[in-house]
Structure formats: structure tokens, C-alpha cells
Amino acid sequence: MNTIQTITERIANAAAGLPQTTIMEVCGTHTHAIRRHGIRQLLPENIRLVSGPGCPVCVTAEEDIALALALAKLPNVTLFCFGDMMRVPCGDESLLQLLSRGADVRIALSPLDALAFAKEHPAREVVWYGVGFETTTPHTAALLENAKRDNVKNLSVFSAHKTMPNALRALLGEDSGVDALLCPGHVASITGADAFRFLPEELRLPAAISGFEAEELLVAILALVTMQKSGNPALINAYPRVVKPEPNETARALVDAWFTPCDAVWRGLGMIPQSGLSLLPEHSKYDAVKRFALKPVVVPFRNACRCGDVLRGGIEPTECPLFGKVCVPQHPLGACMVSSEGACAAYYQYEGAGI
Image (cartoon, rainbow, N blue to C red; front, side):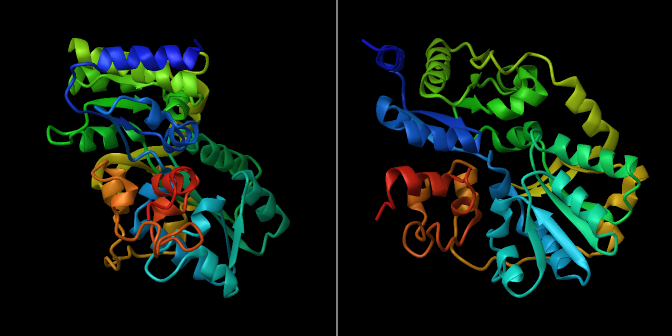
């Protein structure tokens, strides 16, 4: 009997007698790994997995995307971003569409690509569009640190960065329908495992931090099912080869030197207090929104995309009426079908179009 079969049988034994139990995988990479490994098909019928707000591209609010579009439309501006952000629609536009019309929008493998370009083109205004959770924010902070050190004056940042704990607090109220949490390994490698201790201690929810291989995911799910059966919620670090109890102090110090918590709008979750990151007042000259005096943009709801419901774990992607029909990876109508970490993209790629 192989290891995966052994763990799967232990999950089935632990789940016997439990009512329908919903486990939310917070991390978008977990969503893809679960579908790629066929984890859902290995679990008993009373254990249900749902996606959560762990895809940074997916939870970026349309209001923020509209500001990024406004920046890209400005004369003499070059906007750098990660590739997934290029195709996320906002109304009838996307950064990719602006590129096709002549806007100077560029895909970066690292924020430091923007710094190199700014040095080579001092007459251009260069903007880094910073998106992501605790794992990518230190890279934006490093960009700013290097720009300050090298006295680069034509570079600024549009921060759409977000932090995970407050979003989970907002999401996991009494009526969330979530019974246990599969916590993000990448985020926890920066924040430390203890950042998620509030889940069992405050919200009384079993929580397990997992890696991304099949065995690691199944071990974490076994821990969650076992805790649900016993009624004793705790935080289990099932990814100890990468995640430590304490945070990465170097990354935290770098972020704290440049950013401060702020209220932020999340797609599907609305405004969540102190869940975003804005530049500290003393660094406001690097803030692209302030540098170009941009005003907030109100974006009306325009289609039947239910990405927000998917991000809350309210529905599975196949329950959206657009999924696999008019919304496909080649022509996405919602952010969850765009990103490499999006739940809709994962379902489409690994489980078929659902039609």
C-alpha cells in the first residue's frame, strides 16, 4: 500500500460519521494543486473542498484595476506588472487591450525590471503595479529601497497589495459555512505559522498549513478532519520544512519600513479594514496615485460573472452561468478565469469545462 493510499484511508476513517464538512483552501496555488493531483476525487463524499480569497489577482478590486488602466493611459508613462494582470477585465478594457492600442505596458518577471528600465529611460515616468499578499510585498519594498538608494526619481508604485489575516476574519463569520481552513504555505513562509493562530483561538476553526505536493495536502486534510471529529480545533503546521512559527524578520522589517496598513476593497468581499498596504506618508513621493493626482474610480457591475461568490467559497466555478460557455481562458470575463491561481482556471484546466 503506498503512502497516498494509506493517508486517504485514514481520512475516510476519520471522516466516518461526520456531517457534511467544508474545508476552504485559502491559497490559489493550493486550488490548482488539489485539482492537478485529483485530491477531491480521493476524499469521502462528506468532505467538501471550496476555494477562498487566496488568488491575489482575483481579489484585486475593479476600482484598483481601473486606476491601473488610468495610469497606463497617461502620456509618457510606462507601467510594469506581472503577466496575469494584463488580461484581467475591468468593464470593457484590460491592460492587454491598452497595449494593443499603443499604451506602454510591460510584463515583468521581477519589480526590479521596472527599476532597470527607469534607469535606462530617465525621461519616462515608470510605474510598478504592485499586486499580491505577504509573499510579493517584500519585493515591492525592495524595489523602493533600491530606487531610493540609487536616487531614481522617475519611478513610482501603485500599491494594490493586501494582507491575508484580516480578510479571513471578515470572511469567516458565523454564517460562512466553512468548517476548517487549509492555510497558505507561501504566505505562512513570510508571516510565520503563528499568524494563523487566531483561526482556532478566536474563530474556533481547525487550521492546517500545507505544502503543495499530494502527500502534503492529504496530511493537512487528515489533520483538519481529525480535529473536526474530536471537536478540538488547533493550528497544525504540516509544512515545517518551509514554514516556521515566527515570521521572516528580514522581509517584515523591509515591508514595515515602506508600508502601513490601510482599508482595502477586495473583489467579492468588499471593504475590509486594515487589510491593504499603502506607502508610509514619508514615502508619498513614490506613490503613483498621488504623483499623478488620480481620483478614485467607481466601476459599475456589468455582467453575470460570479467570481466574487467563488472567492467567498459560496459557489463552485461550475455553478456560474458563464463558466465554460462565454467565459473561458481564451476570453475571460472574470478575474478567476484569468489568473494562473484562479479557481475557475483550475477547474477548467483540470476538471473540464463543466458543460
